[in-house]
Every structure is written in C-alpha cells, then in structure tokens.
Image 1 (cartoon, rainbow over the protein chains, first blue to last red):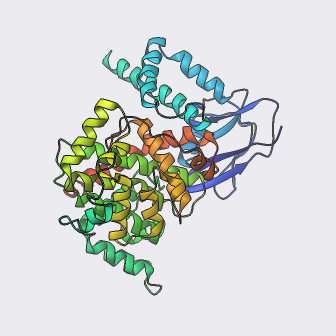
Image 2: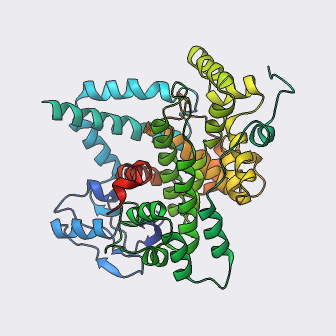
Image 3: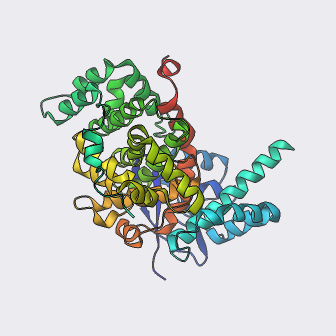
Length: 142
Length: 292
C-alpha cells in the first residue's frame, strides 16, 4: 500500500500534509464528521508544516475548535473510513427522505455520464446533501 | 438549424445599442497594479475613494471567504493581506454586478442568476485552492462572470432569448444548445466577446468563452477547464440558476487536466455551502446596508 497524501486547506491558501505514519486501518474523513474520542492516524500540520497534533491524539472539543480555526478540512483517523461515515450518514437518514432526494437529483444528471468517477461522486454527494437539507427542514417544522 | 448571417457575438456587443462600460475605478486600479512604482498604500488610496467598493471589499475581507483570525479595518490592510492582484480581481467582480440592471424579469431572476454565478465562482476558487494556484481570486472572478453573456443576450435580443428558453422547457435540451440553434452562437461566446471588448486578460476571456468546450481554448485551457467543472458542480448544487435546467455534460479531459482527485469534491461542496451566504450578502446587499 502506498503512502497516501491527504490535503488540508487553510482558507485561501493551499496546504499539503504528508503522512508520516501509516497504521493498519485508517481512513481520511472530513473534520465535520470528526467526533470526540476518535484517534488521529497521522500528524496534523499547519500551512508552515508545524505540528498541530501528533498521531495518536484523542480528539476533544478543543482540538475540534483548533482544527476549524486553522481551516483544516480532512484528517486521518484510526478505525473509521469515509465509506463508514457515509454509511452512518445514510443509516441516520429516513429512507423515505433519501429516496425522495435521489428522485429529485436523478433528472438533474440526465445528460451527463454517471459512470465517470467525478460525476458519480458528485451524484452521491448531491443526494446526501439534498437528503440532509430535507431532514433539517422536516426537523424544523416538527 | 442556425439562422445564418444575422449577427455574431462581436457585433452583438459592438453594434446593437450601448453595452455597459467598466467603471473608471477598475481601470485606475488596474493601471496602478501594473505600474511597478505604485505601492500597496497608493492602491489602497485609489480604492478608498470609492465608498461602495471599499465597503464591499472590507466586508469580504471579514467574511467566511477568508476567515482571517483578526478583523480587517482598513482597505490598506485588506490590500496587504489579500494581495494586490487579488484585490484588483475582486474589484472587477463587484463592479460588474452593479452594471446589469433592467434585464427583463420574465427572462431571468437576477438574484437567481447571481446566486448561480457566485456558486460557480466559489467552486472554481476552491478547485484552484486544491490545485495550489497562487491567485485563486482570478478563478473566483472567472466563475462569477462565466454566464455574463446571457445578460447581454437578455438585454439585446430578448425575443430570441425567450424563444430559446421556451424551447428548452419543451424539449429538455441544454439552453446553450438552443441558443446556438436559434441565434447562431451561445452565451459563452458572447461573454468572451464582452471580456474582449472590456480589454480584460486573455485568460479570463477564454475561461468565459470556452467554459462549455474547454478543449477549444488556446491560452488558458486550465482556466477554461476549471470553470467547466465548477459550472457542473454549481448546477448540481442548485443554488440559483442562470437558465439551465440540468447539469451540463462533462468533458472528461477537462477534469483530467486539473489533476485533482475526486476526494476534493466533498470539502469543496462543504466550503461553498459555508461561504455562500456571506458572499451573497457582500455582493448583492445594497451598499447602504454594508456601510458601518
């Protein structure tokens, strides 16, 4: 397995961070999906390549605030993959809402090839985004 | 089939009626930016003379667009932290939006048009951030202006514009294809002609003119490819619309040219969602509401 490179963004400036350590099972997830008590699977560095948090850090509320302040959008965590997060997100949504979201998004994509990796990922994200928006709207009404 | 010999994008811009001129303030800023003897302070002074522009740029410097850790209180500070060329490009974006008023409302909701344009600009900027581009604001402005040709079409030939819109409603085809069939050219070509008329840089002209056919671009295929992909994402996000009813088809080579992984998509969408409301406020609120 080759050492993956993940990116974090400082708003307005591109910043890249290289993994210095690769544990047996890890995944890159969005900071928005990061939860307290998750364990970092690689060092998190800022734009100047300074270490913010070392590998092995157990995430707490203060860490979450700091990551947000630095504009970091992705981190590697132990034992959780992006797919897990997506599956959990889907499982947390009402199947009816999800079906309605997909039915809404399908016609938008009718002239573009959904087999292309970019379009396939965009489609997936749009269905989730639409479902989340409908879910929030429904919760607000209740 | 094309209706041949009627007009072309250049004629539409140059001959039929008055096309808005770029505000003098933009020419002044551009001249100062290109003058190696001018300082950041002198550029700040030029901008500060325009109250509306200053208010918008300051609001932008303090928005989620930048997320700077401390408050930016003066235009001179904004020029220093944002950058001279970047400030010039943002000034272009804010100036252009104010030029287009009096578009027939039955053809397009201006608010929806600009919401789509801003989404495309924000997306293009995020793709440029992921590509480690130096001046990401250039991509923001190219995205912001990518459909501007449509406003010229709505102003100059509203009858044909209306025909194209109703045809798409019936057939479900792309609006840019219907425009080409009915008028002999589409909005991207008109937008490119407008950029040329305003003597804006070739990179911007081509990014706008070729956003549906990025591989035809000569000078700046990465710029055109970035806007092509950003437009697809922006249409998928459904934050406003400039008339298209579905997502334009992807030119796969354009995506390959950007050299990005599909994993940039999720953070890009999240960032655009996060910045969207701030940026709409900066650009679309009346200046009077932005002044302290």
